[in-house]
Length: 145
Image (cartoon, rainbow, N blue to C red; front, top):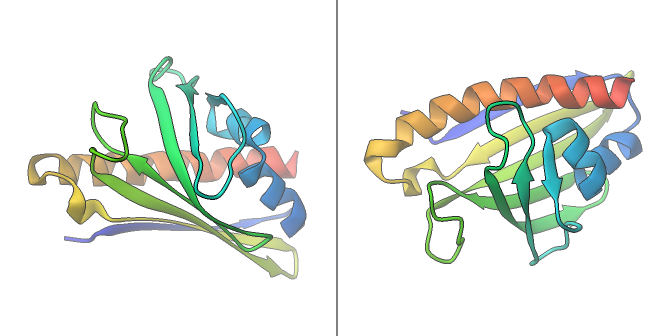
């Protein structure tokens, strides 16, 4: 049983463009398919709702943990019906960026699944594993357009 999801993808775009796509709430919303109410800020809560087909209207809540331009952006988000991060189990999502000869290597890591109730842990891991595969393709299309 693993406690983390790791996805790495090569993007044919400069690191500054990928950083913007990740940390500007409007740009993030376009490729991730979420309508966010305001910007990401370290220590701050970001709310909104999903626009992703099949998940429209699902509430979004995250708390930004780190923004170290242009190499690390991370946030914590809740799992389950309760979107209150003070009471709901959550996982940590990290976006790590490295410049490469052709652009940027983006590594997405989601960890902390052991904090979820055991009866929901595997479902969350499997669902998010597939979700990050889709989102990696979405950001690739967005920054390479």
